[in-house]
Image (cartoon, rainbow, N blue to C red; front, side, top):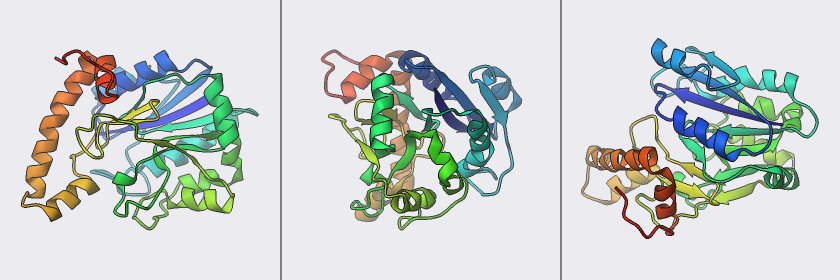
Length: 268
């Protein structure tokens, strides 16, 4: 059994793509757990049946984005429930709201998780220091039993690492547990941005900044190194984002093949 968790904040615009990717690509039994935060009631009502467990939470321990609810608050609410339900051999998966599957999760992948212990997206372009390799939580997969070995605590509070990432507690846990995570590296052949619109090991598509202003560390570095303002860069990013979102909605397969350098046709 896979126990998968996702948190959607401020908007439900990624839910359909994400849920459909689960239905299409997860070939083993799974349960889905979702927390929605800082949305209107219509969005909650529309999406409550998309997941096996659905909860609305508006207030947490930490400030995040535009409201008082952080992904660590989501872990704090969901992980105890998973620990009560999990059985030997079960797997936990965590998805950012704008991360979707583009290939199958099957018994072979489950065996890979058990062999490698911890599988994660790795994206150095996300970091201030490109030599800093860290397990980015846009996608994590690991045996549920680790939640009983203090990993749940490491995931449920903010412990900043050297690049000010909140998941420093998880990287510290991996180190103290003598676990070297297995990285899913970026495999794009076509890059519309150094960080956004990423494919990882041809398994995960992560949009990046899908639920907030599209300003991340590569954009700030670019602004510092060029004559462009951060507002100019943000506007440029959002224009490209509009086109990408249309492609994802209307011809997802073709767009993913395009990013992989394997599509010879014309995109709409």
